[in-house]
Image (cartoon, rainbow, N blue to C red; front, side, top):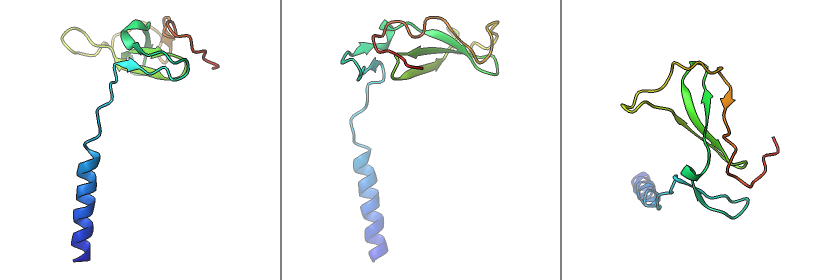
Length: 101
């Protein structure tokens, strides 16, 4: 009986924890400087992974964001002439938060 009560309690706790509000991942909280911007207002660069696939990257100095670069039909862009394992472009532009690294 004690095991059944524990199982019911754990199931109820899991169900309640799933009810937390969704986090908006399209905006940057800018905790460091108090601003909140849509990520489309920041400038993205391109990072090429070891397999040659391109990723959009944005670094605001406090957090970094990355997403696989895709063609209009949804296929990944993986035929890059850019150097591998290197970030290219002004991906730190658009932020007032300094990046010490």
